[in-house]
Length: 114
Length: 114
Image 1 (cartoon, rainbow over the protein chains, first blue to last red):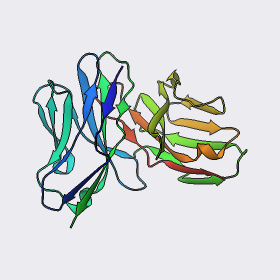
Image 2 (image 1 turned 90 degrees about the horizontal axis):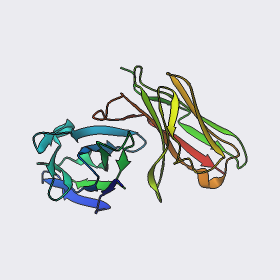
Image 3 (image 1 turned 180 degrees about the horizontal axis):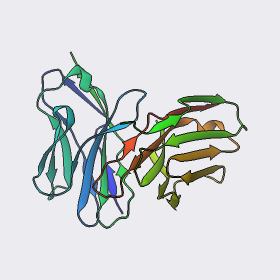
Image 4 (image 1 turned 180 degrees about the vertical axis):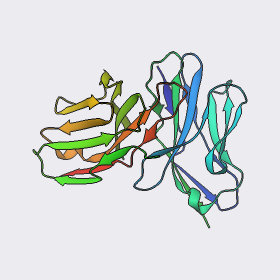
């Protein structure tokens, strides 16, 4: 069965510092991995995805994520956090052999302090 | 481009009343998803459609919930009768028929059952 774990409910970081939001997954077969962001009173917005190829993928708003197959992880990163990055972040996985259902993690709330 | 459009944005009604949530997916998208988001349970997939046909409704909580997609540009989620525990934010999302494509979310309907 597919599953996604986001081990941190909340991440706090100072503006200008690098940020990491962690995600681990469990699937049968090759995974398709996604990160989404949710701002207050809005729907989830797509940030980036890993399908195949380079383990470091770049997405919107300066975010990037590193795929690590041996650790089954797909951590979201940004070199320099902005206050406006404060939001709820979701990791999601879709297995190659798993139909069309996407499994979302529980979400990690990111607070960036000025 | 117009995104996924949901209506109403807010709904407050009394227990026992029928509630109908509406969704217009992005034109050309083959898949439509209904999710429910609560603090306790996070983001839950209720049902999804492919080319207007329901594919997986295993997430629908009870027979009080029903969803239809009469055509490619419209879907409804109905709760009858509504209960206070149905209070949540309900999201509709759509995507292309491709496992590597992300889902596009509407801004949700915040439902409060008194």
